[in-house]
Amino acid sequence: MVEFEFLDEALDINKTKSYHISIQISLNGFSFSILDTSRNKYLAIKNYHKTSSEHDNTDINWIKEIFQEDGFLNREFKSSAAIYAHCGSTLIPDPLFKKENLKDYYNFNLNQEESENVLFNKIRRMDAWCVYAVPSGLIKLLEDKFPGINIFHHSIPFIHTILQDKNTNKDEYTVFINLHGSFFDIAVTKKGSLIHYNCFPYKHVNDLLYFILHVFEQMKLPPEVTKVFLSGKVTRQSSFYENLRRYVKKLEFTRRNPLFKYSYTFEKLPEQSFSNLLNLYHCVS
Image (cartoon, rainbow, N blue to C red; front, side, top):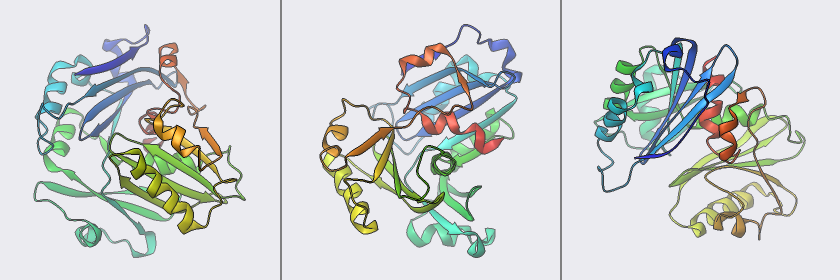
């Protein structure tokens, strides 16, 4: 089940009380990273992949197995946070947000399952809240393993990071796209503000292109001059990248957050990968 792991030789399983752990969970994958908070340096990243034949998407037994087998996941950490990566969420403007209406907000656009709890996160850099659902069994598992853990929707570190991006021209529209295994996020910013955000499921490259170009058309963005930053599961060799380049001319990959240091072992990973996981700590601290 372990797809890869990159561990720095300075990583010490007996010093986890001085480390922060970030966890990312989706329907088909489980990842975690470990940050040495005293040096502000990432020392480890590990990824587990779940094949569709192992379990169906309605249970979390495969995640329980990972917790049982991985030594680091059975240690006590200084702090912890988790991302639930799933397309179902809705953004509520701060003036309209009331905690007692959480289920109404969620069910207006989506359907809450009986086995889910509706959670919410404040988006720090804008006056809005993210409302989403997480399997109740997963919440209990995380809270039992890491008391006091902070749980976030995956869009929170994505939006938080792009709103603090200093490499974009604030006077122009900028598009950010983050690819996951079966869905992707797209956001548009201007003058340091979030203008548009959405999440779309996809199966084929044509699905990706359709949704992205629809946003360009909807927002009246000229594809020849609008800068697009890519992150997640995409490289220059991806068919998605090759096809998108036919329509969008200013494509760039995101870089790792310079506010952190990274183990030399991370050089084996593309810089644009796992950006949400590696930026999650700023949503907690």
